[in-house]
Image 1 (cartoon, rainbow, N blue to C red):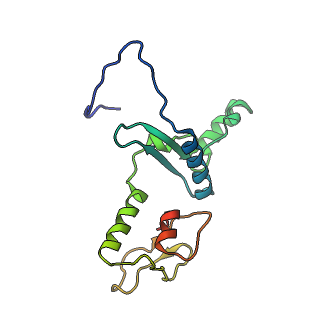
Image 2 (cartoon, helix red, strand yellow):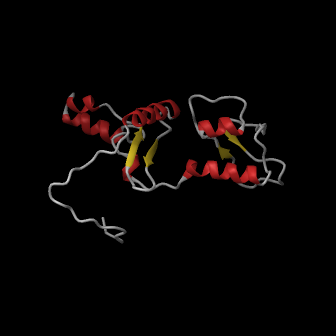
Image 3 (tube, helix red, strand yellow):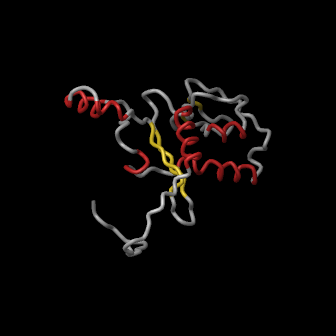
Amino acid sequence: GERKSVIFTRHAINGRDIELTVNMPLQLRLDEVMEHTLFGEKTSGAVVVMNPKTGEIQAMASYPTFDLNIMTSGSSEERVNLINNAPNSPFLNKATRYAYPPGSILKPFTAAAALSNNAITTDYVFSEEIVDDYWKPVGHGPWEWHAIKRAEVKVRSTPLNLHNAMIHSDN
């Protein structure tokens, strides 16, 4: 609620049009991907597709989402209860409400660095033991930290190679 700095200011010009920059086919695909990738009461997420040169928002999604029809049925007490107790807060837009670390956006860069430094090859297949979507690295000395959690996705392709891990953002 407090202004920290101003990066750029452009004063309004009366009579200028506002242009919607959302790419509808991309938006529909983004919604579809979010619905098929995230699921259940334990997952939530947000995606923003932006033109890096202009800052134009091309698509934006927050998951889980909600059915607007819910807000027109039932008593106001039922609606308030639903809003306050819904798993994963579907009534909060996670794409605009919070700040997140970059996460999966770094995976292609990490993969490129691993390939460039011959840490892996394009035909590398992950073969470590995974138990309930958790695994610990082996072959590099004792692992003293918590097990690494894989991303929860509805559909996983096998084998677990670089190509499929990038497609499904698999940790």
